[in-house]
Image (tube, rainbow, N blue to C red):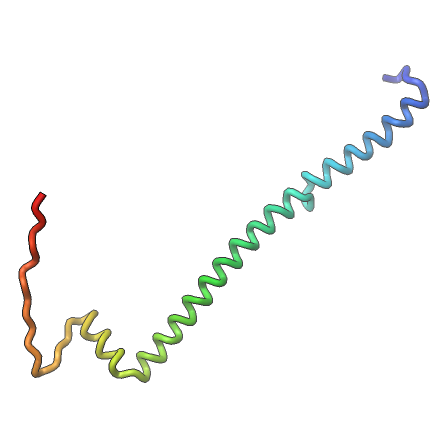
Length: 100
């Protein structure tokens, strides 16, 4: 390698520098592969954020309904706690057993 003519050595040095620069452009800490990974992470976080915002809006509407809507409150009490009005009759039927 040391016995190469000067003209060939002049191609090796810039070629090595170019290879070095390209390597770090793709694989370095701030290289293209890292940027691609960060964009994917950002997209996942944005999707989670949108889901959380939707869930927050749903919960805000439910809070408002629980504070102001008596029919909604009654529905929740009936469904979750099994409450009934004083003049209602409850019929309980046995559950059907599934045959194999």
